[in-house]
Length: 249
Length: 278
Image (cartoon, rainbow over all chains, first blue to last red; front, top):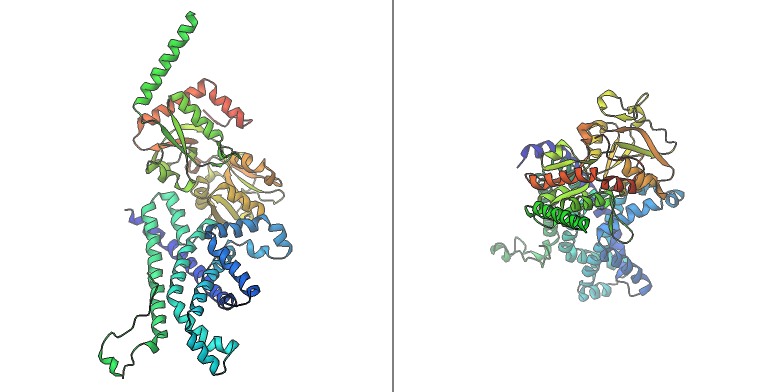
């Protein structure tokens, strides 16, 4: 074990970790914002609305992320003149943009399907009750369907965010110096592959651990109505927390 | 008749010598190469491994009496692959450097060419200040044109001596972008994502400038041969301590240099001598 090389590389690793976090958060945030309306369109009974969304999710879930990344990065490079003509080359010239663009579309596609599952799992009775109260359209979705669907989908969505964080390691292949990029650049010169990739792994573990903590708190908050109230008799039995079915590994 | 017998006897003797040499070395000898570094090693349109390295490796195997087979491995994992015994020798235009010598052993060089920058024609990059010599053997004797290069983006293949050279000499001046293969770096010069490339001059000339996509681009600045980064040429890397294999390759290099096989392969790919100084 060459610990000195790990210590020497720590500042570069921290910079890389910042880039990894930045790419993850930007992609997750934009991806989620895109996914919510798309998921609603996805469950539409009108095939003209549902099918294009299905096509989008099918493409991005059906092809490897690395292929998508190279398609966007080198594909855009091949058409730089045409992109320049419409003013888009400024964006696609930048590897950071290409990385975030691809990861955003990819996570949006997965999130659409996760949310679709959540929407379809909303008990029919709740929707019927809402309709009986005269809710429909936007009100029905924002008050009843989406909050419920979000709670149902949250464990699976946690998985998706963690997967995306790990998937950001691929951006090192389009010249971005994220955690993995730093590890491979330094390892190439020092040949300390074991030490440096182990350090990279530890960085990812720490970030994933923090992410899990955040989502666990969120799940806890959102399931308050399912737990026994402190002042009720159920409070006597400790740890009466009914664990909602979770997909998290 | 006597001539024929003599020839047969000689052939038998050579065969014996060859098998004697190879008896100590496990057969087949597996040669690791990259296959993405034209014209030295590349996959042609029919999917066959081709190139100067590949022909040299075949000639060396013939000369040493080895049975050889090729293993294709991406560049950044090529030394770990050797250490993990996925193959026994690397014939992939690997420059002999002190950094690498700490992990692997090298044979004598089998060629040596300088590193050069490439930019779009008319870009006006001068790389070094003042009148530059054609070849820079010691970067301490020249000054980089830091004003002209400031903020420029330089594409380079990762895990190469060229990347190390940029990191050590220009990391404060230019933005270095590292690519998995030279071809990817070339693509990004054409698309305009990078302003300059630094790589082996022959690789850039044959693999890029002379191709269709290389039109409108050319060499800028001098050639760099500083031994501290660029070593003493390209050699065959083998695991440390496998001296028999190294000696067998060294003898084979001498033999193909002497019997004209090297010249033949040289002329097949280049119109100049790639061996460099003796």
